[in-house]
Length: 239
Image (cartoon, rainbow, N blue to C red):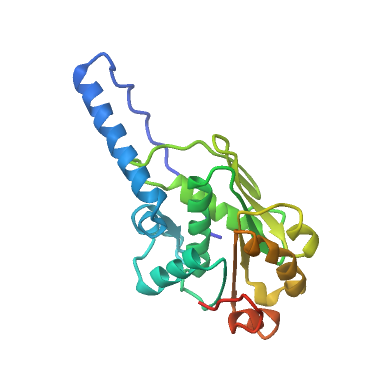
């Protein structure tokens, strides 16, 4: 994953809060932030296209999340069905879409526990499911300044909102890992290439049946993932 260079920006002087003009400006800013938070709390698609930046993995450029109809349709499916499986191809931004949606879920749901699963967790933040959590951190770090600031703690494989105790965790495939937590939502990336896809899926089914979300995505590859995409597993939903 290309890394983004960060240039030093001088810190602006602290406003004089005894100045009435500064107080009025602050009040307008806080009112705007409250309005935006109310808007985005119930509309993840607006949050994505108006707030989220992605990183082009080829050029290393930061880009606004694109307002494309196929991504909006997948978002609607994700909001409607507890279990969604999506076969993806390169440059479709499907993984970025679901990382952003689950970041939104963690940001606006108190006590949410989100699991990002991959074939391996990895050791570095640029590997395996750790890299998915890194993407969530990238999204957080590049939100518009007009959004109300939210404190997070981030370490490789874990992002936490301390004020609401919501968190996003990186995990490897496997039934034991899947049963470790009671999840609000789960993203399984490149599931078509997992050796333990069926075992992990079976262990995660209670999440979808208990009111949570399970999202499986992968490039095309014969195997268990195919049975989910084509609704051969009861309760599946292809997108």
